[in-house]
Length: 351
Ligand SMILES: [Zn+2]
Image (cartoon, rainbow, N blue to C red; front, side, top):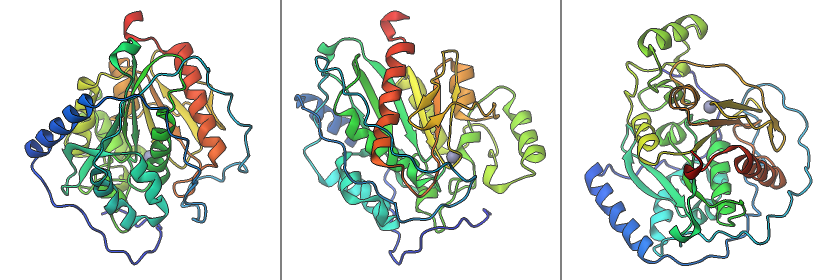
């Protein structure tokens, strides 16, 4: 029911791992996490990927962005503040299996980048039974109270750069360059069905815009009215039959309660701006993206997290859905985020 979106032609055959029961996957994950926690080791942090994928792909849609600008290298991280992070799982087969269907669909994503992120199945499944993968990068308990940050990419499946940016930031998180310890949880692809569809779709496999499916006040009336009147029943923006009707939004909703983030970073494309919802002072810019608060949408994650829960939600709108920012821009956005967190984001002990 979605309007076709231009996409990258490829002859690769889509391969979605067979559905597995949630309970079995949760048990497997619990075992895996237990093994990982038992093997905590200090890491120096891996260097940022030098790969900047997707350069050759054309712009999908959206307003014309300003010229791509090489930004100066970000300031060096504070030298005396390394926060070691949890060791990566030893079994490389797990992240390879997570990445395989994405790479078959999107060869430009780059195997090295994806597999280095060491993703594992969260236990949650999409409408079509695709695993929703995640990766935690966390300091040891001895580092003190950590800020908890949830980074979500590709809520909209046709925004591939959103997933890729999250993967790049997994590498940067392992450098532990913030002044306070941070427990990062990365979910690079919340909407795997949309990402794997041909053509890729903004919505999930049920045709729902997941970023309109969160339980905001008076959702039944507001979300329907917005969709019918403001979007003129755009099928790409259908909020769904009910709030949290979709397994993908249910999973993220559960993360808001279980992980209890101090900050949510939601990555999108291609509007080239920075948006913010929440009671805190918003960041004025992340790299070359400048704050331009777009308004409040019924059922959006920003509305739900920032306004209803009081958890700040930084929404990144990259300039392109299929062409990545340059490497220095990726790092500059990251450094600006860390600087804003250090200044404006309270830790649990401050609250
Ligand atoms: Zn989006």
